[in-house]
Image 1 (cartoon, rainbow, N blue to C red):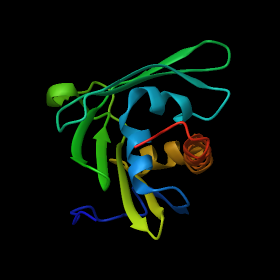
Image 2 (image 1 turned 135 degrees about the horizontal axis):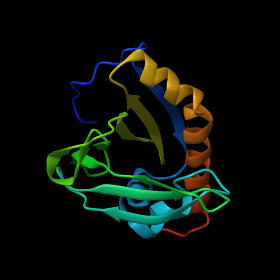
Image 3 (image 1 turned 120 degrees about the horizontal axis):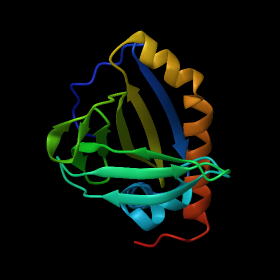
Length: 163
């Protein structure tokens, strides 16, 4: 795994760790291919109406989430780190090209490590203050991110992704 300058602060950060029984290479592909990401990235019955990924530091990570009643929620962000099969870091604090965002909320870190034939999956949501962390937790970080991990694993096991 990539060495890290990230130091978890429980007052500011949310962490979800799981061992999942799908290969790290398929998890990476699920996270980095728009047609795959849009199939599992939000808890059902929500959907992803649009997904644009430019997989490089400074590249865009943009999605539009659609609620069951059709309301859309754009999410624009920027990749900070892309280490194949190991780590993705993206943030809504910046837009593509490192342009500052008007409404920063959090930075996401996805760490992947091979564990036997499966993956040690760690998702970290880094916030600027306790209020933002608390808001994200109350929005359902653990349930939501846990649900999408389950959806991703199910999607991969359905043989929807190939290397």
